[in-house]
Amino acid sequence: MSMERIIFHIDVNNAFLSWTALDLLRKGYQYDIRESYAAIGGDEKSRRGIVLAKSPKAKKCGVTTGETLYIARKKCPAIRFYPPNYEWYQYNSKALFQLLSHYSPDIEVASIDECYLDYGKVKNLYGDEYEFAKKIQKEIFDTLGFTVNIGIANSKLCAKMASDFSKPNKIHTLYNWEIKEKLFPLPVDDLFGIGKQTSAKLHRLNIHTISDLAHANPVELSKYFKNSATKMIEWANGIDDSEVISEETERKGISNTTTLPKDMSRTEEIFPILQAISENVSTSLRKKEKYASVIAVIFKDKFFKSYTHQRKLENPTCSTSVIFEVSKELFLEGWKREPIRLIGIRLDQLTDHVTYQSSLFEDFEEKKEQETLDFVVDEIKKKFGDQAIGKASLTGNQIKRKFD
DNA sequence: TCTGGGGTCCTAGGACCC
DNA sequence: TCTGGGGTCCTAGGACCC
Image (cartoon, rainbow, N blue to C red; front, side, top):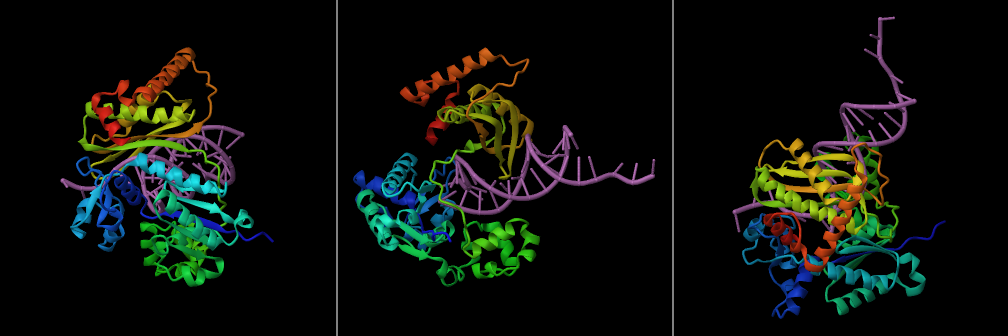
């Protein structure tokens, strides 16, 4: 018999909004935007105008994450929007995980503002889990200035569900023996892994609560959901054996996409942006000391229909120019000459090092030289900033800078 | 001034091989 | 005369998460 697991899920309340609130306060702002009608929103002029986080008051007005600022404003005329500051968010995120890693090495970073902690493994050191949760919750607030929710359960899934029960600054438990009472009554839409498409289908099948799904017939359900049916039913029953994975998991891919300031249909406008994106992704790749075997261009037309077009390379690369050239080709192959609103590049199948396939046309020495040059460019950028060097046109660099 | 960006995982069809 | 079948790789698209 295995020891019962105790998992924490720790989730920053309204992360982006809380962190921006702290940023403003430290800069002398007179009031706390967490207490007002406020949201973090992208820039509407550059067509990034969606809600990224909202205050409890804004939420009460019906403002939801992901909707346009235009709609949010309609629902909540008093709302004020603040721009995101990703560097500051990253700083706070790191500070949080560092604080927690002081107590346990078994922490899985799930996103910028949430993580799992395997408490079962350290319980003998710190005692009762509820008391410990209270202690770290207070420590986070006292030292970092923001509140978190903590879910305590016997699995990652239930811990995650528990941390979402009510907010902010709460601790909830969802032990296996509490599943019927606390999980089953919730709408099926609330279950982790059930998104808009799936929940719509489930409702059509007369499955409305998590309990309905938990008791659904797997054979019947697999007619509609294939292999995912069993998984869904397990989740509804609170069954999840997945482990807390503490090591920094290897990235599977690297991507960078951008919404264009306006729809574009001329390659003279599009290619400089693709060049800037090539520089971005290849620099990240080289920073990780990786090579990519697959290059994909991603684009979205003005009707929001998205396309990907990819190619597996004979020889993995980390070269800016190779990535740019291949991306251009891929784009021209896949593009139907409709105006596009978004473009980007994704690198996949990352490997540590390369053994070059012998190819008649591969000039080994030249390739090495180009790589060295790319590294030199990276170094100069590190010292003097992105705008110091690069073939990208002004437009490309300006766009790039906006993202950093 | 309507609709972000960075990820992961899954599926399905076609090519190709034995 | 009627036309395998299993495994793997590659590509495109979709669902979901924060």
